[in-house]
Length: 139
Image (cartoon, rainbow, N blue to C red; front, top):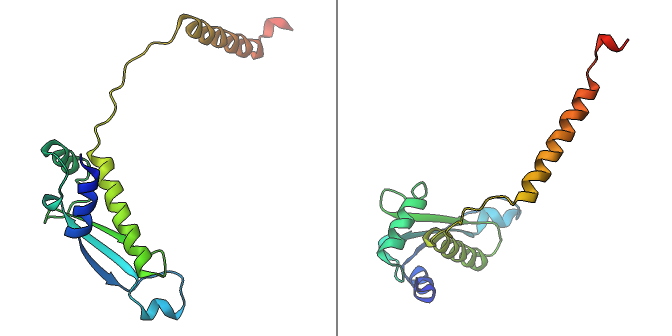
């Protein structure tokens, strides 16, 4: 994965639209188009191998539209510029995280002292509970 090439292709190939945003801002919200909707087609992304692109389709299946696009919204800030930067950053982070191969897990076993400690604590808990039992013969 070439991150620089990917970042450049996200910036160049994405379609950005602005709309009115909700949330705080008073009259500014009703007048200014600060919410950013970023659309990017997955086939337009550069810097990803075929396997990474396949992994993207697999991991982001619920976020991909019928036109093979990912849509990201940002409208938290009052500034159009800041919302645009946030949307681009989110797109980059989402794509990089989805394309990354998961780390291979090495299966491990608990050590002998750890197993013995666990069994000791289980035995202690059992003794504690059995000591709470009411036995009529004790009367």
